[in-house]
Length: 70
Image (cartoon, rainbow, N blue to C red):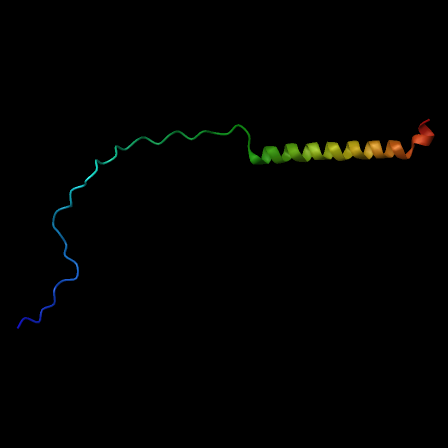
């Protein structure tokens, strides 16, 4: 009676053949650099909002003084 257990995992000496062809290695595409950065977009939005707030304040102050202005 043999009491040696069977191996759980049998390792083969050779690599198994592939069923599909190996894909050729393609060179990586060059990274596309963006012309604008998110920081520049934020500065533009802040500048536009300050101009909008100043314009709103100006129109509001002119309407407050419409009697004086004529």
